[in-house]
Length: 448
Image (cartoon, rainbow, N blue to C red):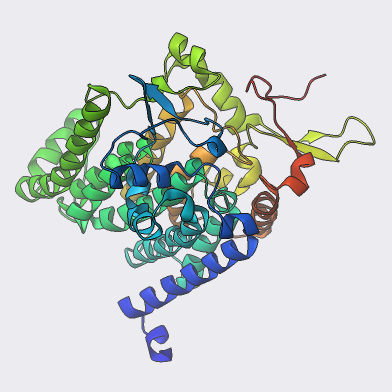
């Protein structure tokens, strides 16, 4: 075993990735509440969906169970549906089958077992970037990046929840990491296309992660001494003459076929439930803010200001009176730079490469749709939608060429402390005093 760790080979990388998984999963279990580990969660929508499939139904077969508080269920044609992208439910089918029903499956514990996958695969991604000559640092740095993602981002508090909204992020982050690993150097186009497809069936914004593979396919099909020239016309001419078009087309087809197959399956699923291949059912949700969705739609410029307010400006509320806790966190969550100030370094990378451009465009493509979405991510400790693109951001941190000085280390320590607080306190009755939750979702800042 020790010889494996000394050699810079595949066995060594897999052994270290397994170690990352064990460490991350062990910490997630140590920080989890007893209820999450021993009971089904109150919002076990994916287990309920798996049970419906086992009963050969696409709807629930009746109203939602009372313990779920009618939270995020859709009613259409007198039937009740779960409209969240369904892939996490696929993973639960064997457990629900063995248990006999959804309520006999500890779904929260199941997703904690999966939570260590994303950090482990991210380690393999950073190691691949290192072997491509892009990080300029050793394996210890790759381990640090993966563990900072595991415990220094909002993924930490997300991993502890197990409920439907957060379970999707746990699965989605793992899929995003596998996608990056497959897409770099366009090494495994079929796997990459499949990951984007099932990513879409887990967290819809992951459909927009396509640019990374397209950029990589073009890059590896250009000669090593490719020079773009100046101007758009010169770039287009150089691409046309220098690109190995046959190889590139083959890569893109191998990527596109599994993706198209998954999208076709999603269209069939929608049509079977709602009579329309493009209808995902969100407008049938029986939620208090349904009127705003009917007025403004699921996505609109109307929501942009509010979402940017959460991402960029949401801070803890300081105490107003001696009897109050020293601070409170709004249920819309803390700003992204508060929970993970390391992201600020992404604004000033020391070096740019073709892969840097590809990852940046991909992260933006995945992030932008949620900024126009009707929901901020409420209820949350930090901006949970960032989990959709955090893997890409941490890969960018790995290849940014930053100086790892005292300020960087201080930001890393802050990230670990803040996110540990979130993981240990969010949705825990004992610490409810530190969170301000107001049911209309209209309160974002402390009143005067």
